[in-house]
Image (cartoon, rainbow, N blue to C red; front, side):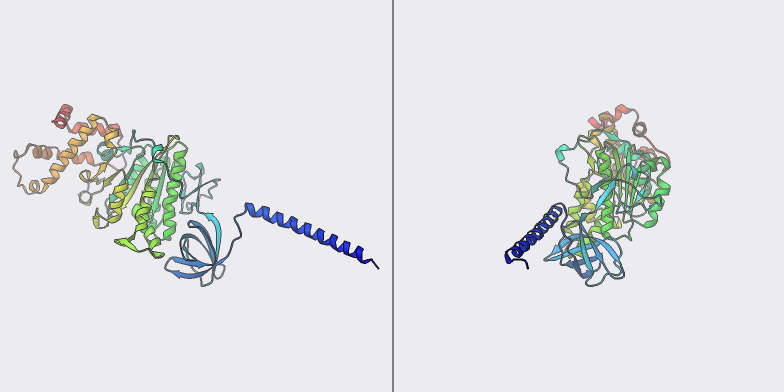
Length: 469
């Protein structure tokens, strides 16, 4: 029989070995914990009203992703859009069939990101960056956040160079600068899509990013097949989130289009960003805000909508040291052709100009139906010379004079000779209308536009003399 002292020493040795093993295990666990995102604590789904979900029992940051696991192996990916007390407020990216009270909510610790690279050129993607054109997967290793850091305004290069968009009325009278952000204000059925297609094909840009946000599904196929020729398709990326997609996915579509445009701008490319439409983005944000209980303030729009608009628009523009630029056109739908719609009014305040399409001109068969009198490009003065500027002012003056006297002229109540300016407007009106009209299949360069504008007011010296008087 082993003496008591030896047995005690043996037990102490075994205890020391176990302690050493457990200490090693604990050190290994601690080392992994330092480099991990932490343990995923499962919460439970407690509320689902409309498109908003509410979960308790877990923690996640605003903007991060959570997986909700429902009945019959159904799963839906969500994003944290807010919190109330100890509850998380979630919005889904897909159908919520199979969700039930008590469904598990698993925080992923990640945020939605954009896959970017040269491989996405020529592709059509959804709001999650996944291809929907049937041309196989997109293999991009680089990722960018959908919500990047804010750009220092002092680091932006000024707008000093004109951009040729291939549309005579815009090139000649509403000259666009490279890096400018403009709104295309239009009601339904006035040629908005046709004008977007013309600029897509004719604009002098290295990369074209098109965001079709909240529009009809059939318009995606029509835009890709009718407005993107083979040359434009090779340098274009289309982000499509139709109206039947959840509101979170529609907002992600706009953010994804902006992130892709920023990526190519940072590579030194000159990017054309076309987003159709800014109004649908605002409506999707309204659905999210109302769904989580934010009160409306103006015509059903919560305050967060008007905070999101400038955050999206300010992402476009000239870059810094890279030398790249994003020239952006955002379509804005005016309900019942009301230019004072709250989204239209807020958009007008944050954009560098607005191009208004007139229903009256469209019904008269004039395309593109650009209403010169109510449209403006705020960068025109800094990118045009004195002669071009005088021609623009001359055209706008005669256009306004004719519009003010249109009723008198139409009914024959105006007596010729009563006002020389009105007489000149009447004489030049047919030529001015021909200048505004353009075949959608034919591009007109910036130089050709200025030459055509100059030919309206011969001799040229009269234009400059009238402007100086």
